[in-house]
Every structure is written in C-alpha cells, then in structure tokens.
Image (cartoon, rainbow, N blue to C red; front, side, top):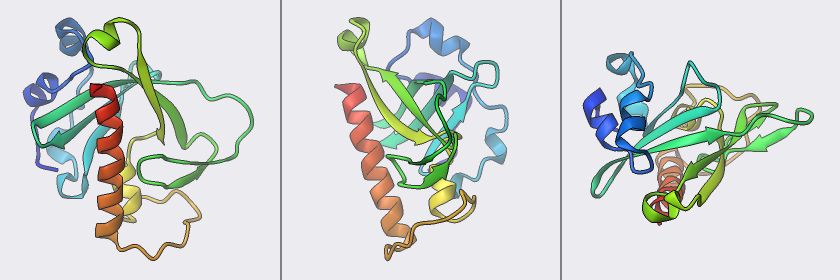
Length: 161
C-alpha cells in the first residue's frame, strides 16, 4: 500500500457522515507504518474498543470503512480470519460489521466478516507477526497477498452495495 495522509484517509470513508469522519481517531504514527508490507491500513480506536477502521486501495482510489467490533463471548477457541485465513486462538479474531454505504446503510443494513482483531492481516501472512501455530500451505507469499486482497475486495463490494 502506498503511504497516505490523514486528510486522504478521512476523505476515503464511504459509510460515515462527514461529522463522523471528522471525529474518527486516525493513527498518529502514519509515518512509522510499514507501508511496503501493508495490503490495507487497519486500526482499532484507542478510545473505544468497539470501533475499528479499515482503508484500502481500489481501482477508484482509497476506500475507507468504519467497523463495529462485536464483544467477545464464550470460551477461547481457534478462529480463522476471513480475509487472510490466519487462525488465532482466543480473541485474535473478531466479528466486525460495517454499515453499508448510501441508502442501504441509512436504512440500517450492514455486512460483517470475521477479521483479525488487530487488523494486522498483512503482517501475519508475511510472517512479520506471529499468531501461534500456522497452517501448512503451499501458496507463496505473493499468492497469499493476492488471496487476501481478493477477499478484502469482495467484502468492500458488499459494503458499497
């Protein structure tokens, strides 16, 4: 992913009002992010555990999505991220829902996916972050990146409706 600025990030959100976009917490460490290793920028709101944000490049430019993180319930078990297919034990994967863009979102419609709770999918699939026991795969890292970007694009298409 290409490095991006706070202004570009705020302008990219498709499922927020202008007021919500102004108030959302953009990471302060943008200059320190490992941009070359990121397929998308994802972060959790440090002031509100139930909020997360995801910004990805698309054919039309940046697409930002505000997400709601479901609270963890039940006992710890192994779960898989639907974007990068990394498996985590415990609370490493969370159900995240996004209000749909436009009229559908104003009517209360949303879509959800199980995603790495820290939104560090790019780092897990490149081996830069460890989630514990890894599944044996014959795919190369570029193939894993391609699969993850395709899964992310499918999720974003659902949000955009």
